[in-house]
Image (cartoon, rainbow, N blue to C red; front, side):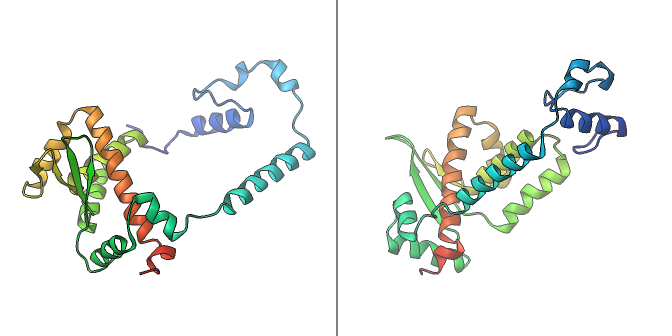
Length: 205
């Protein structure tokens, strides 16, 4: 089976030719079958290319100058007080897991905890072992392992007392819509932790 990023020489040559001709259909074609009329199209002038490059540079400069959220804005974004944020940072820097609960409905909530490097190692090992060939498959695998590693409780069930195999089995048995909901909540949790430990933010504690 061909691995990602591996092409035969002829496929690579055709892909390059397609790219130069502006063909992004995603399927390989015979260069000899290209409409001869297309070859008559004028190539872009140096002036056209210069304008495109200038426009791109202006766009990049605009993005780089976009104001970053201040520390106070980050706290407001996650609904945290300064003391709560300080407690989170202290816990993480002391090597203790931080846990946070999100309300889902009036009846149910979910609690996550921060992951360790050992948890990250499980993800890496799984990717190396399974060698998925598509980005979507890799993303799903990472989401599954991260959720299994971070879940503390859901619907009143304590998952911290369950084995890794039991938590992984639980994730695999979730309805797709529930899995999507929980992974989105977990992504927000991860974003909050990373924002608080950002070099510009952690200095506030």
